[in-house]
Image (cartoon, rainbow, N blue to C red; front, side, top):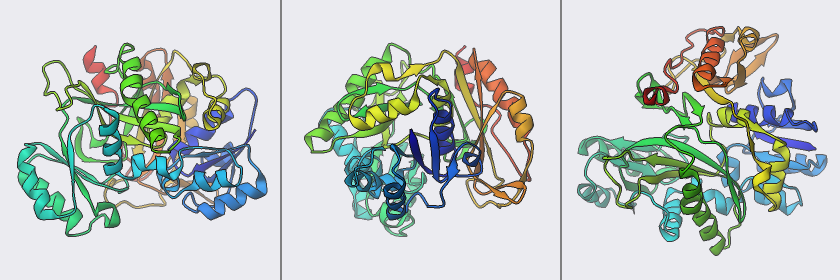
Length: 432
């Protein structure tokens, strides 16, 4: 198959890498791709958000499938535009991508579908928003309605922090139009995990569970990031829970969207909170609640979920995009996986670029798979080009083996002011 992967991060490198492992072989392209995808695909110099440019390329080059990685082009209607030209695309249409693009819309769908989630209210007026805080207690969650590059969520421990977050969004316009409305949301107590479901408009098949590490420093300290590492499977999600998650969370959303005239095809990513025995139960009365939905593969979750998949990944994507998905399309290998993000000094705040990277071949020799998140080629050198630079993944018969392989690879890689967390998968190990 001729396949175009849209995007330029670690997720897209992992998508292209997994497609390159299919036994049947594919003609792979990435728009715009990165220094990592260039080794396994042909990079096309078109930005992911350039809907017109991508559609023009697709019309001229006639790929069998376009796989859209990031959320922004989905919200902008890339899949709609491709489908209008008769080109198959994996990802939801713009109306479905509102499950990520608008937290208000996602909550409305969840409430209508009876999906367990924290209670929430939406405000445009800062005074009314502040007046509502007392009814939620502390901690309380303040969310910008729209896409805010992963920075539009504040878990406020004090009333002062909550009011400051409201002012940032509604008064100071910190997130532009994304913060024109805010949600005040019930804080959910427990342990987070991620479930990626492949959806074909009616059916859904769950991919292996995973757990992301959002905080920048060890011990889950410091500000939130786009993710500093992940592992799969996440033991907080037991095998017995998976059918319930599909039947109570994923499929009700797919059906509710269909009632609204939206056929959802692509990945429906559920960020879940699992409340432990004795923990504070949400108003929903459920111990498993939805924190948020995303409309695409997660990052860095993709870098640990896809290496665990067998079979033909392209066939699964195409069948989902065509409305013909079956359980047999998803084959899960027994190995476990862990990935460690190597980031630029200063991330998630200001950071410098163009630092020379060394040691990737040595990391591969240790058995690690290195995905490029924010890199570019400069002559014969590889240099940093983002806050999250590399995602170093290990596969093993046990989670400990996978983590050790990942960190073995990390130790071989260096660039000026590089840093990483040293405790990826700590929650899983604390359980054992």
